[in-house]
Amino acid sequence: MKTIYMDNAATSYPKPETVYQAIDNFNRNIGANPGRGSNQQSLKSGSILVEAREALASLFNIADSNQIAFMANITEAINVGLKGILKKGDHVITTSMEHNSIARPLYAMTEQGGVEWTAVPCAPDGSLDPQNIKQVIKPHTKMICMLHASNLTGTIMPIEQVGQIASDHGVLFMVDSAQSAGVLPIDVERHNIDLLAFTGHKSLLGPQGTGGLYIKPGIDIRPLKEGGTGSLSEHLAHPGMMPDLLESGTHNTPGIAGLLAGVEFINQTGINVIEEHEAAMTELLLSGLDAIKGLTVYGPRDIKRQTAVVAFNIDGIDCGAVSMMLDYEYGIITRAGTHCTPMAHKTIGTLELGACRLSPGFFTTPEEIQAVIKAIATIAARN
Ligand SMILES: Cc1ncc(COP(=O)(O)O)c(C=O)c1O
Image 1: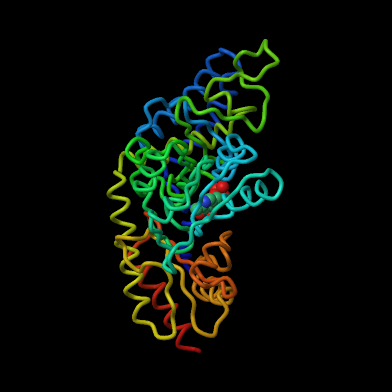
Image 2: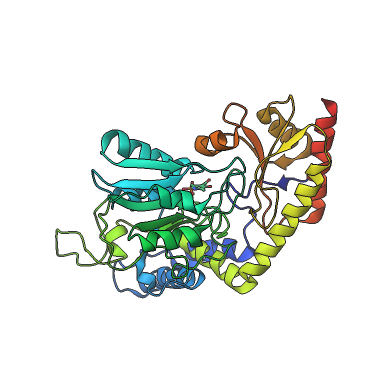
């Protein structure tokens, strides 16, 4: 049985061939620690970090690539952005569709750190009216922090309008781009983004264990860890300049070599080509699911308003059982449950039920989508 991978929202698979090659080449032929000495191998290793920062800067229209710090994933990046900036008495605004990587740090900060948090309600299809953000801004609001696209419903958020509102009110704007970077255009200037958190292993097509944070020059941020950076080593005080300020300890250089290859693949292919392919696969999927009786599909159900993420339930069958049947009987890989986003499930009305999620990627074919629709129709008809 050939596997059909429909879980790109969790992590993209497969990766472009060049990503596998870049990781292998680093491990076999370079291997040295970047920025830890001036031997030729170490310089080669360091140049991978420079090239990866440059490639990401070009993708996100970032003027100074040194403002990008590499981290293990977007969860770390968001934690640094929130905990490195917000202080006791600050107010922060999010939407009601956030992933736990925003919700859990904020919950902890409100419980223990004296931070005030307002989560603005979204509609049952996950969409946000940006005016609702404007209405809850207070004199002590420090930051608006929100995702660009939902990992449950694919709903695309109006980050351009919210970025404008943040800028007009002198409030920092941090974006969680986990479900959009590499597939939707992101422009930190046009979207007024002060902090952009990204993860390398989803639609940026890199390996797991990569991600990072862009921070606009001039914003004060406290690092969450200090240590070796290879720079200013004679001082006990941690360096204050980016990216060293937020990068302590040896990098995941093999991973970043793979991430560089992933971003180069996106830049060469064209983000619009990737977006169009994923939209075509999503449209095919939505129209096929629409014809199946006893099925509820969540979210906008409109490719202009969502990414390649489709959540559904079959009446009377537990979503976990549906996911297992798809896996064991048809070789179709999906994710069921609450997807690390109880807030979004509450918003769309599925907190008790959960849902089964399908997420095609750039390498998904129309034949695979047809096979998925057929399998779901067969399972639904058994009921
Ligand atoms: C919207 C969103 N934010 C954050 C994350 C966390 O990503 P990571 O596990 O790479 O830190 C995810 C991953 O599922 C996500 O979909």
